[in-house]
Length: 628
Image (cartoon, rainbow, N blue to C red; front, top):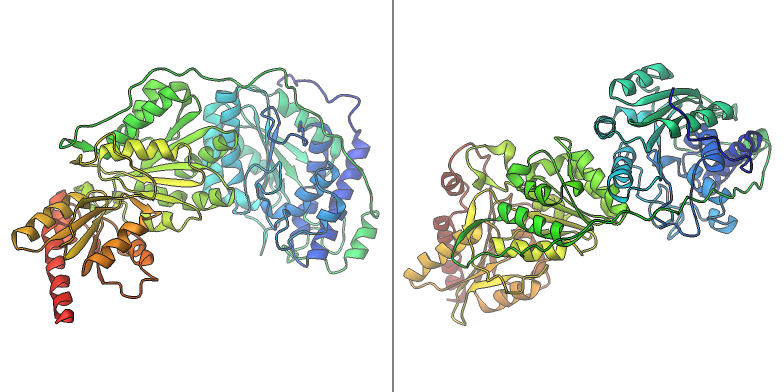
């Protein structure tokens, strides 16, 4: 058996106090949910003893300084148990009685599921299966980057053990040897509609965790002495993470709901009787242990590294430019970290790994865990860039959505965009990514057409708040942007244009080259075309789009993406309030692509130069007929 790091001090609350604290947490959970008319009191009641012992005798938090890097981290992966979370913070003095009464009301910090609006909450939870993977990211930061002795505690529900993302976290945490991470599984047997798959078979959970390389401890989740011993034991485990598998009863302490199906997610029918059965109101306060602040967070050294630049007129790959810019940022900034989904020789994130191996994290083919780890690293003020094929970010979309709820700063790179990747076929083609990422609150969606744009945009992404997505290409494109030209999020470039332009061609990424070729074809026929490179799809350069709408008779948008939600829709949204907007014709991938060469596939999707020119002729003819 591992040697524990030492029992809690005699000055800490004794176990009788913790048992009473557990009852107080139950009472407050019942009353909070009753006042709000909604909530999850029974899910809170099952874990109350687990949290009472943790708060009273093991957690190390300076709640006066919630951003102190030495603090432990506690994540309620079962975020629906928010009444328990807020009751705990009330007992710790972080929430007063008046605020406790605002639970689930408009503008209250005490939302139905926790968010960082209520310090010291690291991340938003409630979409099950996410807390533990994010905890892995925070534990990575503690062990590999900050190199501080804080612990990461994650309270999981047994229902969310059905989520694949939980097992991605189990596998990765064991592989990394994250012995600063402890998961607590509240095995209360009952889900929302029925018994869970394993019910109260706590040994089955333990066996599965052990098979993944964790150290399991099975306890009675209502025996405060056993819980205390388990936490003490967990602190002494070396070389692997620990999971405390706790057998509990949903609705513990109130006969009307204890271990009863059909009581999930609703207030108790008789809250007053439940409070009396739980022994009435208490006013116990916990002076939470402060963390050890002797050691300062580790910091990395920086080196001189030339900013990547590319000659105008040369051919360059934007995915290669991603790797070069990432390496430059990693060399010159100690706070930048990189993650990749085991495709780093395709995304070229391996260039960062060579420059800063201690800040590079191979995440393997586990995109949900990669997104979650990036969020977790960001809670400790590291600046994460995470990369994989753009199509594969779809698997982690809910993690990106919840990252926005967490107010996280996340930088994602999706390579191999569109049909232009060629013969690998549609399973590898990102065709829906701009639409999905544009829908994320506060996001930026960037699709540079050349290598110099990539460098400038990534430099800005590093300091941008919110979710940023960089879409890069497999093939090469012509470098048209001078290295010293201003390229900004929310900007665009006008590649060709005059006061005599009849039509505007708006493109991004690989289709910029095609639009330029189309403009040349049209010019040979006497049709003048303006070409706008909308490298920033969100926020789009509304001024440039509206100017084009006012100065030309028609607009053709072209993108290597589905018609729904991409560049064309962004342009239409920019023009939505323009009373006299011209005809906007969208060219996008409307076929189900197959294997083929990039040229064949772009032609088949009608997003090549000839198709653009054909569409421009058509809309110009229609505009002429309207004028006539």
